[in-house]
Image 1: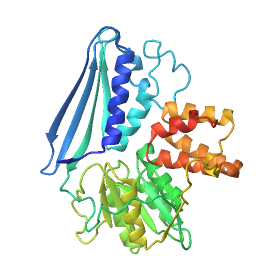
Image 2 (image 1 turned 45 degrees about the vertical axis):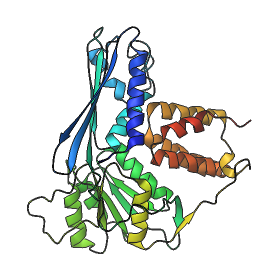
Image 3 (image 1 turned 180 degrees about the vertical axis):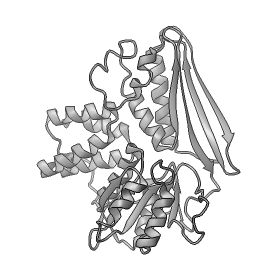
Image 4 (image 1 turned 135 degrees about the vertical axis):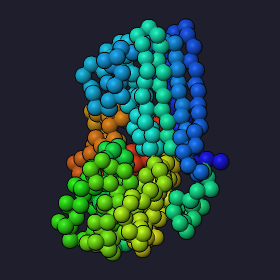
Length: 346
């Protein structure tokens, strides 16, 4: 048995199949998969969605994945647009630690191929951690604000964990590589937690761990990675991560572990009965929702987080709605984000 994020994997495949159907009138759509072992407990799971449709021009084969390109997006990919699927697909595949690409010839169809790392279900993500604990929806904790640093060269992955911790009440600093973070550590009087990717081109997670061990040995460092920890030569055996989380990562399990690690007593949003008008039911103006819809369509994770923060600051009465947006962004729940951006109160 394998540990797979079935929800995100289904979103990726659904979007790719719908996209293929949109551009294949009278042809064939084929879905293929493969499983290749990389270690005794790790595998590379690959998928291909192949169609015999209209194809994509070479100049557009990278642009169709861009989440921030607004101008002319309706004209690309055969004049029909790529829809919200491809920008989101790339974000989801990246979050699962994988990569995606396309092979296509105009008039000759397209093949979207992606692969993600998966591990055996018997491989634990954290030593001594009980995954059967009930999930939590933390909105804060007792005591002073804790300071966290999130380091990842992938902007989407970094935004997810920064948003998750910020929503749980942390003050979060971010860096795109280990060396940039190491240069900023000295400027922080307090640092309670470091969350770092393992592999980065300019200072990896092990360099971060060594720097923390030398200068702030009391600060725990959590590794997030698509692959099991691979200690580089020269890194002392007594230097260890506080925990190693393998992608795909269950965000509730992650927060539960952080709470145990730092001795936090979480607080939670009160449950609101259905049918009762609550602050979370209040909805911003149509213009604000239109802007949110645009961001959801393009898969703009960072922009959606900033939109929610700005809404909360500008209009405190919509704080509940902003919380729902941030929670959905943290979980990459684009289905809920679409509903939030389009639903109307009757």
